[in-house]
Length: 126
Image (cartoon, rainbow, N blue to C red):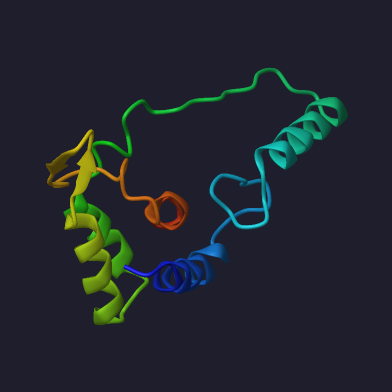
């Protein structure tokens, strides 16, 4: 798969889902960084009364994500069958880990292009 094709598809998915995000959302968004998120948090905490701050990370979430459910979420917003078929192929492509071929029947942990755009789809679809 060409890098150009991955970038094009990531750009398309970002444009579809970006409108759903709130201004205070920073994760996996183009043009936003963890440093900006920390700056916004600092401003929010110092200007308003805050009783608690919650930071959570669901261990193994992207490692155990069902490909079928992910495609169902994406289908709510993406109608182009070619794009959906391409995403399905990327999900099922498999990976080489430590010189051994492994199928990817679940999860996104080794599918690099998804690291940026599919978490956006999941967040906006829930």
